[in-house]
Length: 260
Image 1 (cartoon, one colour):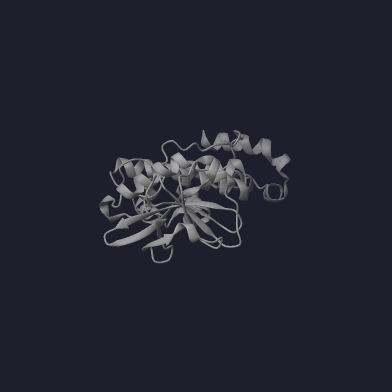
Image 2 (cartoon, one colour):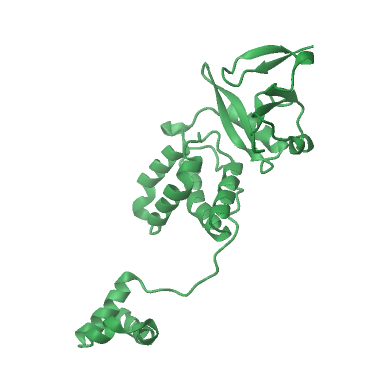
Protein backbone atom coordinates (compact mmCIF):
# COMPACT_ATOMS: atom_id res chain seq x y z
CA UNK A 1 0.00 0.00 0.00
CA UNK A 2 1.43 3.36 -1.04
CA UNK A 3 0.89 6.61 0.84
CA UNK A 4 1.99 10.15 0.06
CA UNK A 5 4.43 11.96 2.35
CA UNK A 6 6.27 15.26 2.33
CA UNK A 7 10.04 15.29 2.48
CA UNK A 8 10.87 17.56 5.49
CA UNK A 9 13.87 19.08 3.70
CA UNK A 10 12.51 19.68 0.20
CA UNK A 11 8.78 19.88 1.03
CA UNK A 12 8.16 17.74 -2.07
CA UNK A 13 5.59 14.97 -2.17
CA UNK A 14 7.02 11.44 -2.22
CA UNK A 15 5.32 8.06 -2.41
CA UNK A 16 6.37 5.40 0.04
CA UNK A 17 5.40 1.74 0.32
CA UNK A 18 3.80 1.82 3.76
CA UNK A 19 4.16 -1.93 4.24
CA UNK A 20 7.95 -1.75 3.86
CA UNK A 21 8.61 1.20 6.17
CA UNK A 22 11.27 0.58 8.81
CA UNK A 23 11.73 1.84 12.36
CA UNK A 24 14.13 4.47 11.02
CA UNK A 25 11.38 6.26 9.08
CA UNK A 26 11.19 9.95 10.08
CA UNK A 27 7.72 10.76 8.70
CA UNK A 28 4.42 9.07 9.47
CA UNK A 29 0.74 9.78 8.87
CA UNK A 30 -1.95 9.31 11.49
CA UNK A 31 -5.38 10.62 12.50
CA UNK A 32 -4.15 12.45 15.55
CA UNK A 33 -6.01 12.99 18.79
CA UNK A 34 -4.85 14.13 22.21
CA UNK A 35 -4.35 10.60 23.51
CA UNK A 36 -2.19 9.58 20.55
CA UNK A 37 -0.16 12.77 20.76
CA UNK A 38 0.39 12.24 24.50
CA UNK A 39 1.69 8.72 23.92
CA UNK A 40 4.31 9.73 21.34
CA UNK A 41 7.76 8.97 22.78
CA UNK A 42 11.14 10.44 21.83
CA UNK A 43 13.48 8.37 19.66
CA UNK A 44 17.14 8.50 18.75
CA UNK A 45 16.28 10.83 15.86
CA UNK A 46 13.64 13.51 15.45
CA UNK A 47 10.48 12.35 13.71
CA UNK A 48 7.20 13.83 12.48
CA UNK A 49 3.56 12.82 12.46
CA UNK A 50 1.40 14.29 9.71
CA UNK A 51 -2.22 14.73 10.70
CA UNK A 52 -4.52 12.93 8.29
CA UNK A 53 -7.44 15.20 9.21
CA UNK A 54 -5.81 18.61 8.51
CA UNK A 55 -3.63 18.78 5.42
CA UNK A 56 -0.19 20.21 6.12
CA UNK A 57 -0.41 19.95 9.93
CA UNK A 58 2.65 18.30 11.48
CA UNK A 59 3.54 17.31 15.02
CA UNK A 60 7.33 17.20 15.33
CA UNK A 61 8.75 15.09 18.16
CA UNK A 62 12.29 15.99 19.22
CA UNK A 63 14.95 13.71 20.66
CA UNK A 64 14.30 15.17 24.12
CA UNK A 65 10.56 14.63 23.88
CA UNK A 66 9.47 18.16 22.98
CA UNK A 67 6.45 18.19 20.66
CA UNK A 68 6.05 21.11 18.28
CA UNK A 69 3.15 21.88 15.97
CA UNK A 70 3.96 23.15 12.49
CA UNK A 71 1.93 23.67 9.34
CA UNK A 72 3.05 23.89 5.74
CA UNK A 73 1.60 26.96 4.03
CA UNK A 74 1.84 28.22 0.46
CA UNK A 75 3.13 31.74 -0.08
CA UNK A 76 3.03 32.29 -3.80
CA UNK A 77 5.00 29.46 -5.36
CA UNK A 78 6.88 28.71 -2.15
CA UNK A 79 6.08 26.37 0.69
CA UNK A 80 7.03 27.41 4.18
CA UNK A 81 6.77 25.86 7.61
CA UNK A 82 5.03 27.89 10.27
CA UNK A 83 5.38 27.07 13.94
CA UNK A 84 2.00 27.07 15.70
CA UNK A 85 2.85 26.07 19.26
CA UNK A 86 3.71 23.11 21.42
CA UNK A 87 1.76 20.12 22.67
CA UNK A 88 0.09 19.86 25.18
CA UNK A 89 -0.18 23.66 25.56
CA UNK A 90 -1.90 23.56 22.18
CA UNK A 91 -4.08 20.46 21.93
CA UNK A 92 -5.00 18.67 18.70
CA UNK A 93 -8.31 20.49 17.97
CA UNK A 94 -6.67 23.87 18.61
CA UNK A 95 -3.74 22.96 16.37
CA UNK A 96 -6.11 22.09 13.53
CA UNK A 97 -7.92 25.41 13.88
CA UNK A 98 -4.63 27.33 13.96
CA UNK A 99 -3.32 25.42 10.95
CA UNK A 100 -6.45 26.19 8.98
CA UNK A 101 -6.24 29.89 9.86
CA UNK A 102 -2.54 30.05 8.97
CA UNK A 103 -3.20 28.59 5.52
CA UNK A 104 -5.97 31.11 4.84
CA UNK A 105 -4.15 34.22 6.07
CA UNK A 106 -1.03 35.04 4.09
CA UNK A 107 -0.94 38.87 4.02
CA UNK A 108 -1.32 41.87 6.32
CA UNK A 109 -1.92 45.52 5.56
CA UNK A 110 0.49 48.46 5.61
CA UNK A 111 3.43 46.23 4.70
CA UNK A 112 3.83 45.02 8.30
CA UNK A 113 4.56 41.29 8.19
CA UNK A 114 6.28 40.24 11.41
CA UNK A 115 5.76 40.92 15.11
CA UNK A 116 9.11 42.77 15.19
CA UNK A 117 7.96 45.07 12.37
CA UNK A 118 4.71 45.67 14.23
CA UNK A 119 6.61 46.61 17.39
CA UNK A 120 8.72 49.11 15.41
CA UNK A 121 5.53 50.73 14.09
CA UNK A 122 3.99 50.65 17.58
CA UNK A 123 7.08 52.35 19.01
CA UNK A 124 7.04 55.11 16.40
CA UNK A 125 3.39 55.86 17.10
CA UNK A 126 3.13 55.40 20.86
CA UNK A 127 6.54 55.98 22.41
CA UNK A 128 6.11 59.69 23.08
CA UNK A 129 2.60 59.24 24.49
CA UNK A 130 3.31 56.49 27.04
CA UNK A 131 4.81 57.24 30.45
CA UNK A 132 5.79 53.57 30.87
CA UNK A 133 7.43 53.23 27.45
CA UNK A 134 10.86 52.47 28.93
CA UNK A 135 9.35 49.44 30.64
CA UNK A 136 7.65 48.32 27.41
CA UNK A 137 10.92 48.60 25.50
CA UNK A 138 12.83 46.75 28.21
CA UNK A 139 10.29 43.90 28.25
CA UNK A 140 10.42 43.64 24.46
CA UNK A 141 14.23 43.57 24.33
CA UNK A 142 14.76 41.11 27.16
CA UNK A 143 11.78 38.73 27.01
CA UNK A 144 9.78 39.08 23.82
CA UNK A 145 11.89 39.90 20.76
CA UNK A 146 13.77 36.62 20.54
CA UNK A 147 10.67 34.57 21.33
CA UNK A 148 8.09 35.91 18.88
CA UNK A 149 9.70 38.81 16.99
CA UNK A 150 10.39 36.66 13.92
CA UNK A 151 6.82 35.35 13.65
CA UNK A 152 4.51 36.53 10.90
CA UNK A 153 1.48 38.36 12.21
CA UNK A 154 -0.75 36.02 10.22
CA UNK A 155 0.75 33.07 12.08
CA UNK A 156 0.61 34.52 15.60
CA UNK A 157 -2.05 33.12 17.91
CA UNK A 158 -2.97 32.96 21.59
CA UNK A 159 -0.82 29.88 22.16
CA UNK A 160 2.35 31.87 21.40
CA UNK A 161 1.32 34.21 24.20
CA UNK A 162 0.78 31.33 26.58
CA UNK A 163 4.18 29.87 25.72
CA UNK A 164 5.80 33.27 26.31
CA UNK A 165 4.07 33.55 29.67
CA UNK A 166 5.22 30.06 30.70
CA UNK A 167 8.77 30.79 29.55
CA UNK A 168 9.03 33.97 31.62
CA UNK A 169 7.42 32.23 34.59
CA UNK A 170 10.04 29.45 34.52
CA UNK A 171 12.95 31.84 34.06
CA UNK A 172 11.74 34.44 36.56
CA UNK A 173 8.35 34.37 38.32
CA UNK A 174 4.60 34.25 37.72
CA UNK A 175 4.36 37.93 38.60
CA UNK A 176 7.02 38.87 36.05
CA UNK A 177 5.28 36.70 33.44
CA UNK A 178 2.00 38.51 34.02
CA UNK A 179 3.72 41.89 33.74
CA UNK A 180 5.32 40.93 30.41
CA UNK A 181 1.92 40.05 28.93
CA UNK A 182 0.35 43.26 30.25
CA UNK A 183 3.07 45.39 28.66
CA UNK A 184 2.94 43.70 25.23
CA UNK A 185 -0.74 42.82 24.81
CA UNK A 186 -1.87 46.45 24.20
CA UNK A 187 0.28 46.48 21.05
CA UNK A 188 -2.11 44.02 19.39
CA UNK A 189 -5.15 46.01 20.55
CA UNK A 190 -3.60 49.07 18.89
CA UNK A 191 -2.77 47.12 15.72
CA UNK A 192 -6.35 45.89 15.42
CA UNK A 193 -7.73 49.40 15.97
CA UNK A 194 -5.39 50.70 13.25
CA UNK A 195 -6.50 47.88 10.88
CA UNK A 196 -2.94 46.57 10.64
CA UNK A 197 -4.30 43.17 11.66
CA UNK A 198 -7.83 41.85 11.35
CA UNK A 199 -8.20 40.96 15.01
CA UNK A 200 -6.27 40.87 18.25
CA UNK A 201 -4.71 37.37 18.46
CA UNK A 202 -4.17 37.77 22.21
CA UNK A 203 -7.68 38.98 23.04
CA UNK A 204 -8.36 35.83 25.08
CA UNK A 205 -4.89 35.66 26.64
CA UNK A 206 -4.90 36.04 30.42
CA UNK A 207 -1.90 37.73 31.98
CA UNK A 208 -2.01 35.64 35.15
CA UNK A 209 -0.48 36.67 38.46
CA UNK A 210 -0.67 40.28 39.61
CA UNK A 211 1.88 41.93 41.87
CA UNK A 212 0.45 43.00 45.26
CA UNK A 213 0.00 46.77 45.72
CA UNK A 214 2.95 48.57 47.22
CA UNK A 215 3.47 51.91 48.90
CA UNK A 216 4.24 54.81 46.66
CA UNK A 217 7.94 55.68 46.45
CA UNK A 218 9.56 59.05 45.92
CA UNK A 219 10.55 60.02 42.42
CA UNK A 220 14.03 61.32 41.65
CA UNK A 221 12.64 64.84 41.47
CA UNK A 222 10.98 64.56 44.87
CA UNK A 223 14.14 63.23 46.50
CA UNK A 224 16.08 66.12 44.95
CA UNK A 225 13.65 68.54 46.56
CA UNK A 226 14.00 66.80 49.93
CA UNK A 227 17.78 66.81 49.99
CA UNK A 228 17.95 70.27 48.46
CA UNK A 229 15.73 71.79 51.11
CA UNK A 230 17.81 70.39 53.97
CA UNK A 231 21.03 71.53 52.33
CA UNK A 232 19.63 75.03 51.91
CA UNK A 233 18.82 75.02 55.62
CA UNK A 234 22.47 74.34 56.48
CA UNK A 235 21.92 70.69 57.35
CA UNK A 236 24.11 69.26 54.56
CA UNK A 237 25.88 66.67 56.77
CA UNK A 238 22.60 65.46 58.24
CA UNK A 239 20.90 65.10 54.85
CA UNK A 240 23.81 63.21 53.31
CA UNK A 241 24.66 60.95 56.20
CA UNK A 242 21.28 60.16 57.74
CA UNK A 243 19.78 56.69 57.47
CA UNK A 244 16.42 56.11 55.80
CA UNK A 245 14.66 55.50 59.10
CA UNK A 246 15.76 58.96 60.26
CA UNK A 247 15.02 60.91 57.10
CA UNK A 248 11.74 59.19 56.21
CA UNK A 249 9.36 61.19 58.49
CA UNK A 250 10.97 64.49 57.61
CA UNK A 251 11.12 63.52 53.95
CA UNK A 252 7.41 62.99 53.65
CA UNK A 253 6.65 66.25 55.46
CA UNK A 254 9.11 68.09 53.26
CA UNK A 255 7.73 66.61 50.07
CA UNK A 256 4.13 67.37 50.95
CA UNK A 257 5.06 70.96 51.83
CA UNK A 258 7.06 71.32 48.64
CA UNK A 259 4.27 69.92 46.48
CA UNK A 260 1.63 71.88 48.32
